[in-house]
Image (cartoon, rainbow, N blue to C red; front, side, top):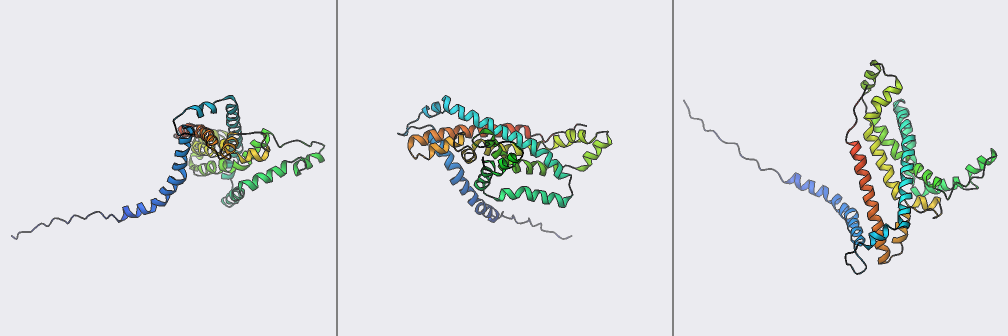
Length: 291
């Protein structure tokens, strides 16, 4: 009988190379976030709660809550909600219709929806402005019908139309991507249980597409409430939103203007965070199927 010596396996030291590679890979993104996201937010908070001498103060926030600024803030929220609601009402049926097309046609329609997004926002908005002018093509067409000319520009209607025109694809694409991933067997099961097309849409497809709706609402509402170029261009500065006021204050390039502009930006940031928390709260549950 021979004695066998049991040799314990050598302990392999974990390689530090993957950790170093991850650190090097993440470093540019972290530096970008630090310089262009975190640092500007720090400056906004600093100017919001300080006076020209650098002392702590709440006067900036008190001035922001004056009737003049509250009127602009209320208008901004209402127009952003209107544009978001219109985008949702237009986007959901269109996204649903795209998912029912042949795959080749789906790709073509999605490409057509994305084409305007490849054009700069300024160019798209100026094109819409030319279209809505008193002597523009739209009023020319209405004139041949014996209608008009209609003053579309310099109105809240023009601003909402500009928001819908520019941000509608951001509502369609997330809804489409979610609906396209729904298992078709669920629709077949609903049909087997006696649901018609209308009932299947509202009892199966709609609950399962809540996450796409929430993403679309967030992607439209956030830029709508903070925009300033659309309102400035389509109303010639006559109808001001919160973004217009912030841009106007910051462009003065003095300490007092920075403080009020930062205070307005701080309030706008809080509104955006609250709206995202609310939408994410409803989007946590992907929705149940009720047949």
